[in-house]
Length: 252
Image (cartoon, rainbow, N blue to C red):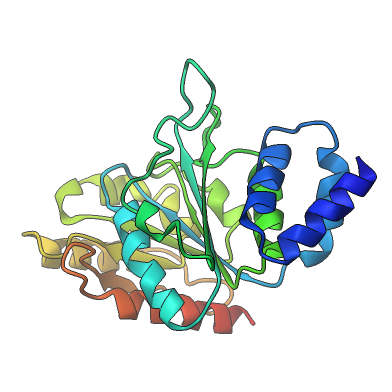
């Protein structure tokens, strides 16, 4: 398996999609030789910007990714996307793995999209996420977008994985903002009010800013922005992209 791992890593670093897909299967399913493969992938880690999108189901995280990908590609960036979906009770695989909203980008050679099964783990991401990230780093990704399952305020595990965490909510969720205080508000770097074309957008923005004002300031000095965005109308997305870039520079 050692020689096989070496050959596979070589192909991944040459942006071979088939090799990248095979490696992702090996590390996420913990197939024979996954530890050796992970060891060979590790030197490529820690160089790209990892952006986590979390928030409740229906907040439009996939739609946001669908609209953000062309903006990243316009900057000539290579992008990896890991979408975590609920596990199928029958197969154990990703129950919503088709992700039709973002599949139109699948033919772009500089974009790699993969669905991962949550496998029942709370916190929004599976334990195998680290291995999957290492594969996409070796693929040469400049940005890796990680979308969690959408469990709401308990999605704090993403903070251990992503450099920049964006919490996505909508004007229609009402009291969800109050529940967020116990979890997501403490780990998010950017707050996004998607579907900002709906009524009550201004109230949701005001409620979020008020709730943030009650929390201690970030220990690293970052001022957490609250951004209105509409993936449907393609509005506010450059501002979200800029906020992610600003946070990455702030960390650097």
